[in-house]
Length: 624
Image (cartoon, rainbow, N blue to C red; front, top):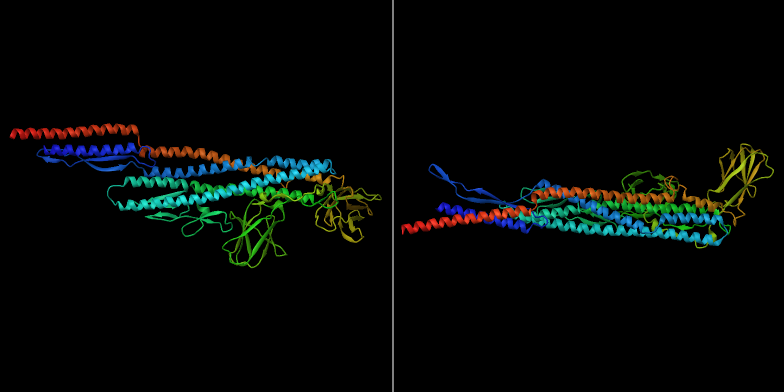
């Protein structure tokens, strides 16, 4: 009878624990990170009673989490990938909105080149010239607006990076604190609630940055970043730091707890997305936009300088644009400074560069780590990728400078010309054959090759001493050049170039002079209008219009790829979460069934106790 009572009590206790556990599951069905708990029951050791054994009831061995380390780790990894995809898609969507909302630069460029054609149709009319300057100002404003909005997104991304680092540090500190509590719980009953809280924080941390975790023998969890740095070990967390870039204080980099820059090593999560987006989409987009602005200003100004304005002067610049940005590292110890100018726009790229002194010579690499050949010039300057670098002061070994040829160019583009009469619509030079010529040579073309040459408009005569040789004399009769003649090959002197075709006779001559018909001539305006299709960048293969079209394609493609990746990662994350929840999630229907099951078990156990009590009472009454 005592055994019966003990058995009933054990069943009652087991059912009560099971009911409490089921109730806890139901209460936490919507709690993020909660793992369903189950009661593990074991049969008590039976007592022998002669030829047979009698059961002795039940014990509750443990209350366990329904948990799969493999599925949970897979979910964390998927969370990191989804968060990266979502953040990257948000950023590219914003950039595409910025591009579409900054005005029609493509249309503005078309209008600008069409305005040169309008001037060519009536070169002496002031209205067409004034309209051209208006179109130039409108184009510059659109470049400015888009450049400023891209710069604003850079500022926003840098702030988000700093904020995300704070969130990462908060999560790792909380995990370290939970590690301490879990360790203090010892080897007794598993602290299920603490383990669930830690897993939830790990999932949150995975959404911020890619991490890996190792569960140690004492129950604590060690966490490592995607760059390999320890973030948590035991009850100690190691904070990441948001630090200013050594070349640009407004740009946020990431350092580990020891101060080492790990910006390029981090991946995954929203932080990895922001770092990747900044370096692979936003930086190249800003540089490409700036490169298009530089190409526009350089090509228009270069052709403008080769014509005559209404005052008979060589053309002054229409556009103004800033020089390449050069910034020294905060770690520099020498006194050197570096300056940079663009000397050949066709050779420029959309890269940024690091110029470093090794103690004996200077070297140049792109910020991506690619070596770039650096040429030493006789005047002490250096040249590479269409730029010229000047160095002053004394550099120390290890000193370095960051060169951004076009990063800020779009924001600095402006119209420098205010007087429409200064538009150089006329060709600067004319060439004429002497009336006494007897040969078959004819003038092909004449152009200004170096408008800075003081004698470019001074006039000259090309005289043939034979069908294959010539001399060049200036207006005063002094010889300034000569050589062998080949039909179709340019003849150059004093910053001009003349091309003749055919075979001249000995004694034939051709005069080169300043254009005296500047008011009505439109030769240079036509050449400026033709710049819409003329190659300026990539070795003269890509026009300004094409360069901007390539930029819009580049940004649009990045947005489309980001959207596709988000769709893919969303599906994969749904699968990972579903698989994890199939083990750890609370199923209300199942818990409802368990509730009935354990309620009935509780009632049955109570009946056993009641039966034992009745038997005991009857026995006592009989003995009494």
